[in-house]
Length: 438
Image (cartoon, rainbow, N blue to C red; front, side, top):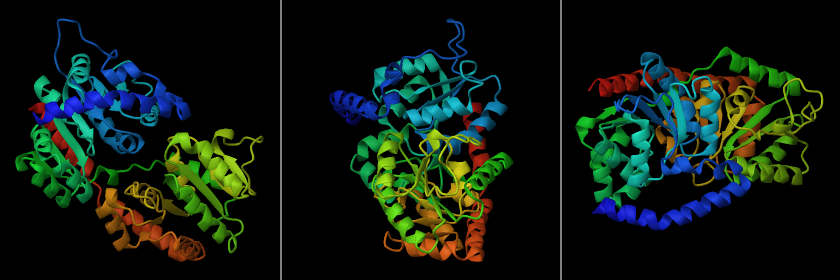
């Protein structure tokens, strides 16, 4: 009954959801494309003959950019280990979709199918499952939908949730729908949680303890390629290798203002400093550009330049570089001295601090960290991350940028936390192999 009522409410809300999608498409046109996929209609790659309905595909669901990037090493390991298996990757956002198409361009249309995840209604999911024929669904983090879990169970598709996390705030939300949450969790075959605290919250909501494993976070298993470091160094040489560079990563509305205020205070002591601004959502790019220009700062936009170009304004006089592109955060982190992590100065729970940490870039964060609470605590205890208020941000930046030895020490401490916690990917892969064998 709980799931029936949920589905009924979802049906009533679907026109509102579609209208919101249309409104988002006004600023980000990609939201207006490929709508049939959101209703479970698509053409699968490597489709078998009609008489062969074997469920042999391995399906990964990664909501957006962050989850997909974290999942790439795991996806690649699974693809190498099971070379004859069809692979399906779903995302929810166009930005996540762009990353899938960019990273696996050579496999798309062959053994790999990429589409948007259908809306969480049984008939859309049924259409999707008939076309995709997955044996196993691997969900990154905690993108849990009641009908998705139920439809997989009815279809004979096993479900593994990798890198699962559940904050106290989210657990309260699930607790308000206790019966629905318990039914959903009962359809999960394996829950690979990041830590015991998250695991306990899932158990309290009704997860079977026999279906849970504590693996740590696969986000520690970042692979830093030499080409990435070389790209970062190339950017530094272009805008002046001796300049102090601050990056504010994955910003939400309101955080750009905070970072610009702190940066303008920093300029009084470090007049040659450069600020790199990386908004989280592409529909905000133009608004952020206007905000930067209104501050009287000399702006360069990533979309208007290429490496080595002579026609662009990016040079030693540029004060702010707006990264109005997707999928390039890591190379700009590699070019930075200090990272201010976005999502932490608004009530969004913060974004992944392990990406700068893996590059030995020390991190400043605001107080909203519930998405990465234990990871932030580990980094802060080691000295590689500092939690500072909006009012303290300029002072903290100045202290770290003017003391090279201190800044390098903190970057090394951050990187050591990443190195000490690697290994979750292999544990999750072993669980995947068990589910496929079962």
